[in-house]
Length: 209
Image 1 (cartoon, rainbow, N blue to C red):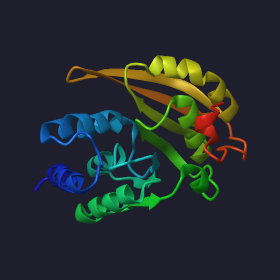
Image 2: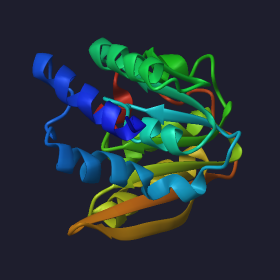
Image 3: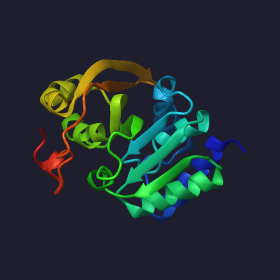
Image 4: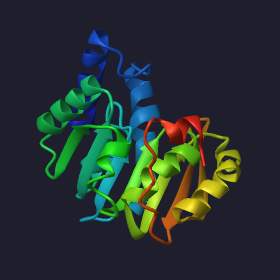
């Protein structure tokens, strides 16, 4: 059985026990989870060290890891989702891949400027997400925020945050995925992020930069 097929079956079965995703039809999983995740495949090179923030049931990280050989860490604050991801990693025999139950602001204390790339899909607005993501990146690394049609608006709102955090826009890629507009915001880290970021106590969400 193909790894994507096995992953899809595990997702459907586990979703019956607790809510991993609202998308649970095989055809929709293929398009809205797998194909969507793979829209950033060309930016990932073998051997890269990649962090997926707020991975949920493993998107976009695990589909990308099925297709390419790189070191992947997935983090999420919901333990059931992390347990599911680790089952998938084991079942699909994905090497150099692990899911960790932790909040981004806590993980950042030990892993600052450690990753070549940070990826995140459908987690938070760009101002908030940038504060969680950029501290993890090496200078010169790339952050990819996977968004829907309003990506440009989010970028406009996040300009101040990016300036404070050391990020600079490279491009906003736009594509049509079976009638759905998907946009991926690519940000390069051009200088180190101050140690006080990300702030704790949910401040990146409550009071974005």
